[in-house]
Length: 114
Length: 114
Image (tube, each protein chain N blue to C red):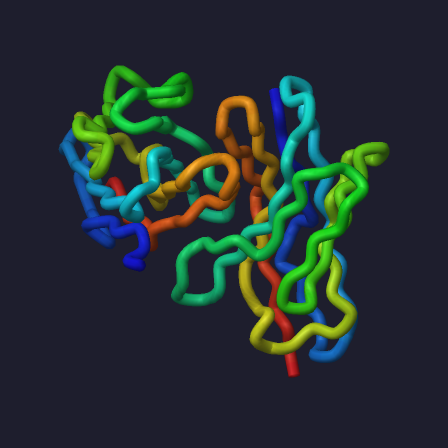
């Protein structure tokens, strides 16, 4: 079946350091999966961070970026300089435009320390 | 616009008891999803609807779980006889259509089965 694997947390990074959270996917039943990063900040609900629907394209939001790499089936999340406010749980997900179905990874808890 | 509303926020049950979760999606969103999220795991799809029709309930434990969306707006997820393994957060999400391509999540209902 379709699946998403991401960096196992928790991940602790110092403020102003760079970050990468790995995400790889398997889309055996989806010809052209769409890829997403969702985030849950403390005390809040899950919300979309960024999305990319075309292989080879890059998405960006709030200083984060991720590139859809079909060759390596990856969608790693990166940020050049993290802030304490980036502390949250990040979920990689793939979506099937054929049936409006989404599959989520297990989530990566990020803690940014001052 | 108002977000996705879920109730109750918390529920604590003994094994064998029944519980219902209610979801009010964003107005105009035709697709509604129910996800189960065990602690430290990602959301796992239980069932989703397009308007009032069930599109996929293959992951719903049909002997104890049921879900309805009779008028294509609000939805109810019910567990007939809860088990300790049902302990999780139950998330409702809605989307307008695939062009928008974004899930909007409610705050979730945290269920504990003792």
